[in-house]
Image (tube, rainbow, N blue to C red; front, side):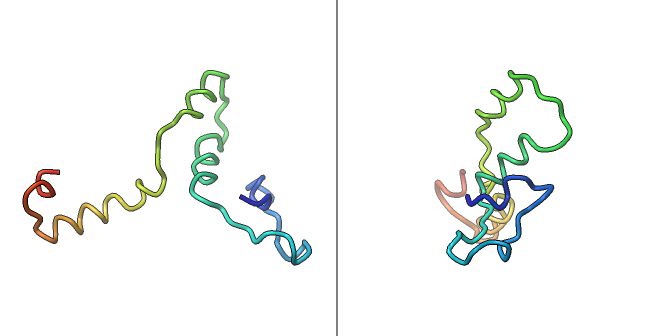
Length: 83
């Protein structure tokens, strides 16, 4: 991801940079990283290592409920119904 979101407390404005600089994007991986280490928590080295290996998938977390609801509404059969 571009540098614009390196510090969420002071997001850099794209209009302050030349037009050839990349457009700001805050992708899922970066969003998860900020969620894992952001905040006021005091983290030990072990905490940081544990969070580094977090297996969460932000996109999956965001769409799971809607996806399950859509599948159930479709009245699936067979293996899909069993899942």
